[in-house]
Image 1 (cartoon, one colour):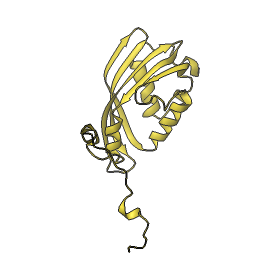
Image 2 (cartoon, rainbow, N blue to C red; image 1 turned 120 degrees about the vertical axis):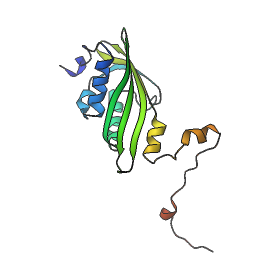
Image 3 (spheres, rainbow, N blue to C red; image 1 turned 90 degrees about the vertical axis):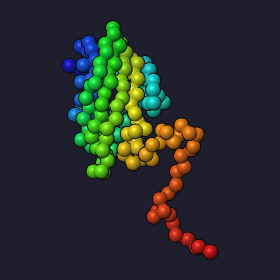
Image 4 (cartoon, rainbow, N blue to C red; image 1 turned 45 degrees about the horizontal axis):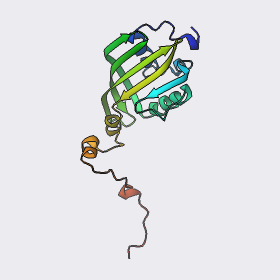
Length: 164
């Protein structure tokens, strides 16, 4: 099957899940090539970060450096015409052995000419980054109070100077 025809047989959410699983779990990044329509529309948290398949490949490669031994299961799937949607459960661990990952997300696409024309990837990135230790625990409830997150250097990495 050629790269540009990989979705020509996609008929349902199972096919969408299999593509996503291959890319993220099996790390078959060759499945990205040709997956996205040249006039791709992106919605959700990745809007602005992705405009073409090259951008998606970079996101996959970048996050793959943070995620270890991930597994993805499909909890729900819906197919309606050229629209496919899946709800996914992600488990695994981060690059540090104490970082246990357990979060959910949704993926919805509209296919056109055998490629993804509209792409909505909406995962619980905040929980993922909390579990990776990059955001504080309970970050969302804290933000909902109106508090701002303050980024500070850890005390051990601050340069030592004159303490007069």
